Amino acid sequence: MPSYTWEARPNGGASLTNIQNVNIGFGRNYQQDPFRASNVTVTGRGYTSPPTIAVGDYFQIVALNGATEVWSYSFYVTDFVFNYGINSNADTWTLTLQDSLGNAGKANVTGSWINNTQSGFALSNTATLANINIDVYIGGGNGTAYLSAQSFTNQNLLSVLNQIIATEQGMLSGGNYDFLNGVINWTARGIYQTSTPQAEFTDTTPQVAAIGNTYNEFEVAGLTGNYATKVNVNPVGLATQSAGSGYKFWDIDTYDVSTTQAGQTATYALSTLSTATSRPISIRVQTKGQTNDAAIKSAYPGNAVNINFRGTKYTCLVEGGSINGTPTETTILYNLTPLSEVKFNFTLNSTYYGVLDQDKLG
Image (cartoon, rainbow, N blue to C red; front, side):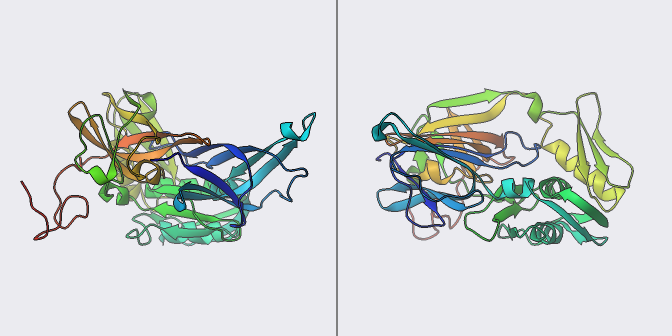
């Protein structure tokens, strides 16, 4: 598998030239962290004079295997610096970008919603106030949570979206195409638990060769950021509701419509934080030498991956991570949360695990 070619395409057009390094940070570290902007820094050489680039311009960052696009993400310019050397051969440039969550973090909005509004409607209507579109992951509907009536003036948009999604206990991420100030994707509670693994990282023969990749480093640990014995949910205008007990607690601010629902939110959140023992938290992969593109295709928040480590099998959710690309190598680090179900088992009519009456088993 050749090293990937990276492109930075302004407004989806022709890429900037002579790219030397692409450094991307995406998603979050832990499952109950607030969502934040994904960032990318692109460095390169050349240009007698810098191209016309303005703060807020749309860029698509793309990885190609030959002529085939295997990974892409949409970003918006926050800075562009051109450094002149003593001669033109020493000229360099640096492009800094954030995704649409970054745009939300820079926007203050005034708005409201009525009592019993579902989380999906609140996300969409609030983001639209800053010309940001919201897309729901297939199967998510309008979410599982209902919100109490709220009215806000000049409030930070990303803070409001984070409180809505904390109520939903879902996920937010930047989108993959341009729409005014961007697109934010959201996932409803529990949807990612059903995700089919997009890659299998293993130190032995993969169960599914089509998505099998070797890994370079695998970290298993018990971290405070992933553990609590008690969760306190603080719904606006209502009494705090708790699940669990003890002194290792986690506070979550929500818009839950009732104390009953707030209690359910606390119970669900505690289930994501209740493992004190060591668990998978990260895995690092070099794409050079792999036999397929599964590793880079799975480098999005919300994807599931399988890990087979010295005979122990895990299925994990990708919370976020980082990608570093050069002309000769691409390295990916994934921040992981284990899912409740280990998905190495045979599934009927699965592209990966066999189709009934078409594949031989045993």
